[in-house]
Image 1: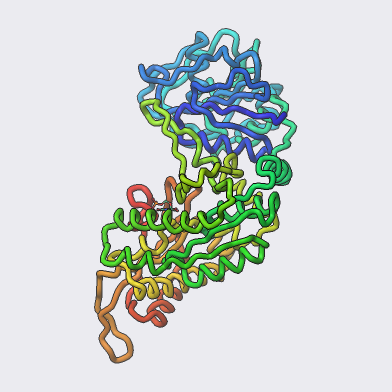
Image 2 (image 1 turned 90 degrees about the vertical axis):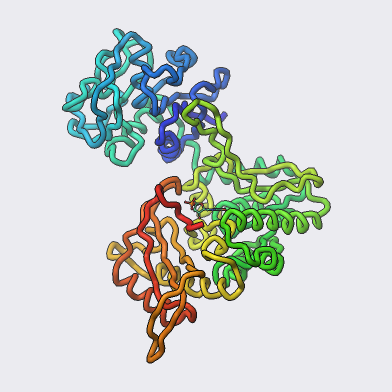
Length: 514
Ligand code: XMP
């Protein structure tokens, strides 16, 4: 039986991060809403309670029945989790005037405590809380403090129960990984059997069982998730997997042919569909961003379904859905929102069943699985790219000529990024989460080229750093890099005479301009 840690989500922004850290310890975990603990699941080896935007004193604060797991399996409460355990165990949590936020250092560490083994006094942790624990339950004892927080960490005398006021999952808690390792491996007894290699082996086996001799259809986008999904399925059922790759005409320069080549090199059975004519004609004259997206979404489903319908004996539709797409996230009123991207839409009259082999993986795990499958590094490290492609990077209506101009500028930018090695030896492209060029197609400005006056369009460059696309900061690209790219674009791309750099963060801006 596969061991698992359950992470109960009380709405903290770092809950997913706890999950990723546990996975880094080669241990499977599930993130569930605070009130959905699987009481009868014998594979649960431990429970972690997350932080929360609430105070335990808020009337709408999320409540959980601790007796479902305390005393049965090891429990670790983090931040709100620690306060909740104190509050409901006879301790005291008090509202404080100032939020404690930032770095702190552990002192008075109780050396023989199993959770803190290997962590020394002065270890840095990250605090982010409003309330303070001012008394812990009678059957608990303090195991570490900081200069400002006496009950920074405590443990129970009677049950395998620990609680920490700080956030071990965030990078700034320098001893956080050691603490989580102590909990997951030493205390919960994880056998560390969750790895890319074991995932590939067990998934290929179970896909063979699940699919038998059936035929499967998969929509490829050129992105990491659908590509890894395809290679995995190909391992399991070979040519009985048919992949469909739709070219809407707004991909990057030469992307369709390059990606088709890469897929064929991987031995995939791919049908490439050039549907650009349809997309361009349906988009003619459309400038409003949401309308563009709607048209592209609708056309995509139409083209995909028409192609899929030709594979008359298909029984399954595979999708590269990953775990963050499926986690039931909590909104502030405690309602569960299920976010599930059903890209392309199911061809309903074909009665296909859904197959989602990556549904338990975080993005970094998808990449590890891709490497395990021997996929080329460039495909694995590809930046995310929006489904509607360059259509949402042309501000104004879309024509073939405008797409061509943007493709040229974008290509110069991205190629330069792939070829720029930073002083630390890392390639600039790999430091950036996502980069692209935007054509301000309805704006013109004056310039000079040779002896001629020009009156042409600006291109904006965008590059962001991020870990999850939920928030993003503009990337601090080297000046010499920007200078060269700007020069090259203006000299080589006819129709562009000015290059700007976008320095907006998300939020308040978004990554894409439309
Ligand atoms: P924003 O612009 O909202 O983008 O900050 C967040 C991430 O999502 C990508 N994106 C899309 N991906 N279809 C997609 O498949 C879309 O319509 C779409 N719009 C934005 C964007 O590129 C970024 O990675």
